[in-house]
Length: 166
Image (cartoon, rainbow, N blue to C red; front, side):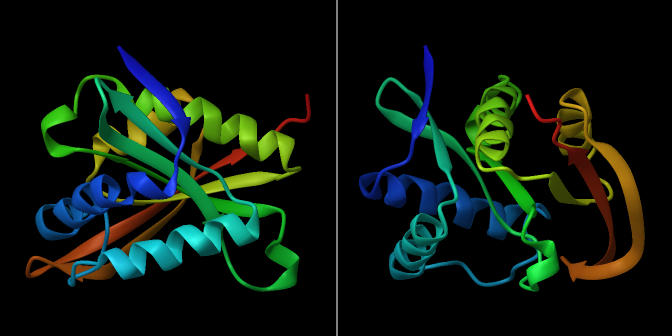
């Protein structure tokens, strides 16, 4: 059984392993260099200071995915908009873990008074695009060849969910 819960500091090594695998092997993160545990600890601390949630998916004591959101852009006028991230371990993809990690993010956004969630997704990542669309995200922008990884130019799609006040 997969349980979704708030992340704790002790989850960071497992989350780091998932994140670094994504950096090395996918275009979900347009980063070339892997992160260190110290970088993830700083990331975790910053999320806590900003009041942003981090959720983990745990199965039989093992972290199999995580989700969060953070600042979309640093300017004051964007303070009611966040950008989300959902990551699943490579050997756990296709099991619906991403679908379990999305609802707590949306609920947290509602509770925090967030107006919009933006997802920046590799234009070829149909799985992530469909995941977001299942939760009401709609494509609002398609930027051509703005990223470069694995010796190819990549498109970036922005999907957006306007949060309806409950």
